[in-house]
Image (tube, rainbow, N blue to C red; front, side, top):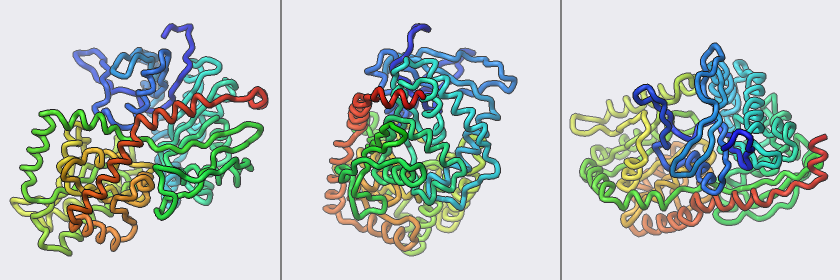
Length: 506
């Protein structure tokens, strides 16, 4: 994009939308290995925007001298767009992301207030980094641009943007849960965070419960006036699930402006999955996996090291299964993908040690020369291979203690075909309100987890097919393209009034 031209559409997200590598002394940018997930979904918006810009951070040397291009032009399968890299020092990244975001904000978002660590939090640095993100976005944006901010670690960006560009259209999307007022209010910076979010035109969430929690905090803490509430509609289950919510507040009024609350979960990409699984290469790989497993039942669990993901509880349940049902020994195998945290993520060290300890203990107790009960991978599995494992798996365990959505559940469903597997899904994953036909489980209860594993193993073929058919229909209807169309419609509907703009500018 020419230097003097301002963008009409700016995405602000901490992650860069590609993988950066050095080949023969030259920096190259590659598309993300996995074409599924949030980054490819966001890049899909660039196909219809000729002047789009993505703002992310990139670590700079300690001396502050930037040794990389601040702006790079990317051409890939999603289109052509600029990426503006905000230089942050290692100290800034550690304080902003590894400490304040992960040790103070993360446990509150996921309703673990007992793990809230206020001591090392550096809110001044967090605020400063958010200000830098906002300034970088505004440097690229036209006065009336749509600026779309992503995730909790950029909570303060909207207010800075509103102060710099009062006529901008500002949207925010939460990738995580949003907690109830009694948990959110543990944060000492609660008013500042809410003041910023209430500067948006649209605040988006995956499911109604998170939107309602946000509305409750806004009204009780900030005095925002609730607008119309409408019944929750498909794909959401309005009752009967732990995170169900029968009504959805559509908007708030605050200091003369309207803040719309949008609820729409990001979807999987079944078309992409189909195209890959229908190749000869994928069919061959699925057959190889099935031969390797033989007559054993294959369990799958995919996630990253994080205490909210419930990996410890899931592994313990698998160990109890082998103890409780000795006839299953050598007849089942668990492939556990638990990606190790990035260097510097001290908040997750204990969780990683516990996962490794449990896997070692279970394999040591029950394994033998010809059978290892659990295969643990602490590295990510490439998308092309992962979907083949999903197709071959008999049971997928998605049992977080709390999760904003969890795309693994939807991707596993999208991979099922003639002989479908069983999805065991935590009630406390956002996806549970979309997939009531999974075997829903309360992961806090050992008895419920044990019963869910038994039910999945002993389920009849007819029940498996019936449940899978219902879930496949939902995943294919409310896919990533549906989410993108919905979001575009909400963006097009943003029409700030002159009165709102003048009050905000004042």
